[in-house]
Image (tube, rainbow, N blue to C red):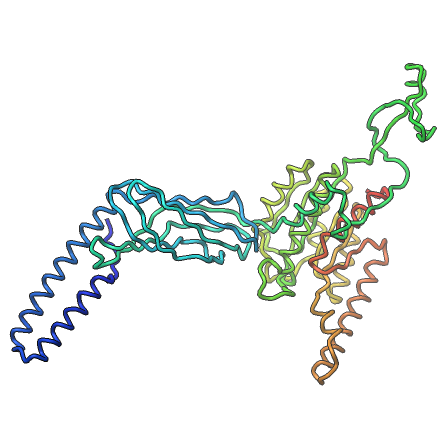
Length: 453
């Protein structure tokens, strides 16, 4: 068993301070230095023996029956969302302890409320809690907690570790998905910018036969069923639900940008994942199959999720993408297009999400041409808020004038390149990162309403 790490306690500091005061008092009264030295040595030996016995007895009692630490961790965490982490220390031995507890939470968790002082009574459970805010996606580790325990006589404090190691996943913030589901159930989607579209005509997938109702089209009447039942029977159709949506997500260097530096979970890539989850949820609720591919990463880090149907597929999508991080590489649009054609042979709605620049025009145009040879392609690009801020700033200094002129030049170049890409069929979305999810859902609904997917 490893020797405990010791820290002098408050009682030992008090004893030493008292000994020093007595020594000074003896010197002030003119006592012999030889007598004072012998007394100091004898006192030191006594204190040392007492401290050794105190540490030995306390460590022995602690290790014979250490308190059991239990964390009540949630099944998963969401980036930027504060969660309370309750902790319980249950004493199984006959001794009481005064200790300072610091849970060894992952460095990616911003914690408050640690360390905390606790008094653990024998045969009782002591409860405490602290808060944690995940600052990045991926796996986070909760190692055994560090506990600094005061010895019986308070001469020393020794450090021990209790509890077990636990791992949890930090997912993108799915609050937008939850809010969509709630508003959809309450028919108030306009509050988050979701538009409703009137569908053209009837669906193309047969649903059921039913009796004729006033207002039904004569073209829907099934004459054979009408003759068989001796009453008007119509065919009821619904929008075709066996479609596929493939999300192609750029993980290149531009996705590392953050318009709100210092905030948690606001990088372009984090907000793109939020939009991906919202788009996937909506498409799955519509009965379509949803898959995803990443590009702009080394081959070993690329993720590919085959299209699946059903709302349960959202969990698989989140499980595959929750720990993906943007890289410092430039995205290879042509390779991404070839990879999608290889993986997805059946016609699908391919949504490519990237951060577009005017210098990407020729490469991206070629990739879109390859994809459009088989699929319906929607290109979604991120519009950076900092550009709009520079364009609208007051022109009160020479630097501000230069910055504003540069922003206008950059925006014009990007707009021209964007229009060239949109010249084919116009399936483009250019939105701020925090509005991307809503814009994708609106465009998806419009395409479904027009019968293009």
